[in-house]
Length: 253
Image 1: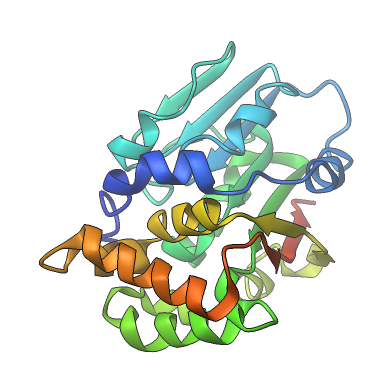
Image 2 (image 1 turned 180 degrees about the vertical axis):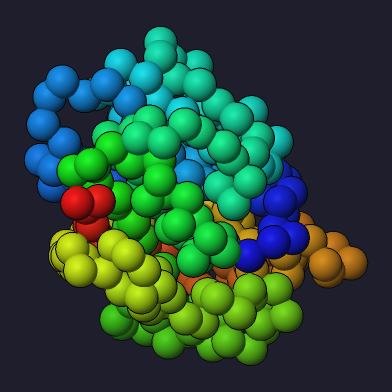
């Protein structure tokens, strides 16, 4: 989806500090599809480098595409890690340049069919595409789940991108592409306990809650009121959430 560049820059510090990293099992399942020697990988919508940083530990070269300058500035330099401000829809690489292409919590922001057509060309024969995301807190069970779901669907709705209401977008788009015949869907449990500051930090990192707060006359008061409502409903935590992961793996034959 075009037009999103820059919307996360103001949230980059909270994103870096409070977005949960990907558990080792996700990394292991992806890397199992790319036997050594692991030479080159590409991370699309790299954000603050949560995926690119661990890819750089496994591959000789990693390219991280992140069009938002504020987010890209938070990617920690690592040997072999190159960052670029290009969008995945516009980037140009030589054919058969990468053994692995990834997108973590990012594919829904993209023009999926266009990106998948380019990815097909960028991957070496036998190369792997990995698209993965996790469920947000408003999908949780218990009292906070329905409360945050109402905030998401009502209070924050004006700042919710339409594709965030379509969690099946990546699977459906991938299934309709040339990768569809090799598509493999995996779901992984990913329980996390968040303290009250961690939950508030996560919400601050989102385009919808963060966007809503910034649109208020007093953003700080908006956050204080939200925190007070959470405490009144569920206490001060820690709160149990299931950041269930959907992992889509596909191969270029």
